[in-house]
Length: 393
Length: 199
Image (tube, rainbow over all chains, first blue to last red; front, side, top):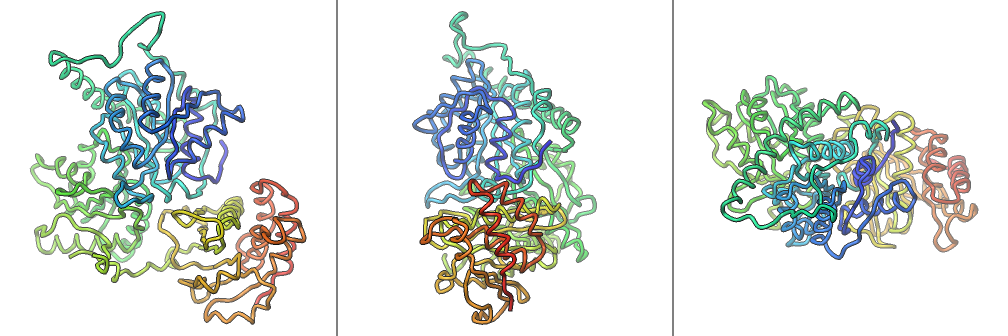
C-alpha cells in the first residue's frame, strides 16, 4: 500500500485503473476532466492496457460504454452536470440492458444560470434511471467506492450500472492523502469480469430489443428486483472490502446519534464538516448527531429508520432541489417513516447549491431551528433554504 | 425564517487547532503547485493535509489564490479558508488590487516576495517577512527574467518564517513534485530559507 497526496479526480481515476477496465469511452467536462486525462496518461505510459474511445458527446460516450459492456468488456467513464443530463437517455438503456458500467461523477450544478461548482442535482435528477448511486465524503472514499462499485455491479445477482459521486472542486480539485491499495489485493478482490451473456459474432444474440406490453413490465420488475438484491450484495462487498483493505463502509454511517435529540442527515463532502460541527456542539452540551448517507440507490430506508427513529428531529440536508416539492432526500426519508407508528419530526434544508460553501455555523443554525421545532411541538415550515443572500433576492 | 448571509459569523478555526495558509499569485505563477508541495511536505512529516485552488476558472496573469490546510489530527472539515494563519504573496504587484491580509488572524504571518525590508510594509496586522524570490529564481534559472517561477523559493521562506514544516521536508517534496529542474528548485528554496528577513 502506498500513500499519495492526490486530487479527487485522480483518486477515482486511480481507483478505476486498479480495476483494470478494458474500455473507457469519455468526453471531458469540468470538473471531471482530469479523470479522462489521467486514464489516457496511464494508457500512454503503459500502466493500463485498455482502449480509450474519444467521442463527440456524452450521449455518444454512454452509447460506446453500452456497446463495449454488452460485448463483455469492463467499462468505466466519467462525467458531470450537463454531460450527465445529455447522456440521460442512454443511462436508462445501460440499466435496462443490465450492464455493470461504473461512472465517476464530479457532482456539479445544472444550468441555468451556468455554474461549474458543487451540488448533487446532476445525479439526483437521474435517480430513476436504474443506476446504483454512491456519494463520497473524501478522496479516499472516491477511490475505494470505484472498486466497490465494480464488485457490486458485476455480481450476478445485480448486473446494474453505478455512479460514484465526488463533490465538484471540494473533492475533484482538492489534494488529500489517500491510501492506494496494492494491485495484487485489488486483483484478488475483483477478478476478471466474465459475463454470462455477451455480444459475440460467433453466437449472435440481441440485447435491448423490443419489449412489448406482454414482457416490458416483467423486465422492469426483474430490473427492480436486481436493485433490491443489491442491498445485501452491497453489505457483503463492504464487509469483504473491510477484511481485505481495512477500511469500513456502511450505507449510512451514524456519528454520536445514540442519545441525540437532533440528527442531521448529510451526503457527500459536507459530512466531514457536519462531524466537526457535532463535536463543537457536543462540547457545548447539545444533544446532536449526524448521519452520512453513502448509498443513495438502492435507498437504505430501513437503515435510516433504525438509526434515527429515537431522535426528536431529523434534519435532512439536500444539495439539490425539486422545485414544487423540496429536496429529494427529504421526500425519501419522509416516505421511509410514513408507516412507522411513531416517528421524529422530519425537516428539510436546501443547502450549498451551485458551490455555496457549507460552514460549521450552518449546522449550528440548523440545530437551533430543530430545537425550535421541539419547543413548539410542530413543524411550521418543513423546507427551508440555508444561507440565502437577501440582498440579491 | 430563512438564513441570511448577513448574519453569517465565520467559525474561528483556532477552536479546531489547525494551520491554514493562503497563497496569492497570478495565473501561471504556480500558486497551486506551491500549495501542493507544501501540503506534501507537511504530509511527509505525518500531518493530515488538504490543498486546493480557488474554486473556479483561472486565467493566465489574473489574480489567483490557492490554499493549504494541515493538522496533526485527521482533518474533517471541507470548508474553504476564510481566516488563514499565514498568507504567502508570490507577486507583490497584486497588493494594490487584492487585500492580501483579508481575514488574516491578528497574530498571523505574511510572507512577501520582495527585495524590500519587512518594515517598509505597513499592513496593519500580522508579522511581515520578505524574501527576494524573484532574484533567487532568476539566479537558479527558474523561468525567465520576465516570468520567473518563484513558487519553490517562496516555500523556503515559508519554512523559515513559520517553522512548522522543516526545510528538509520542503526540499524532499520539491524533488518529488517539480516536473523539471528539480535540483535548481531545491537550491532556490534553501537559499530563500537562509535569506528570509522578518520584522
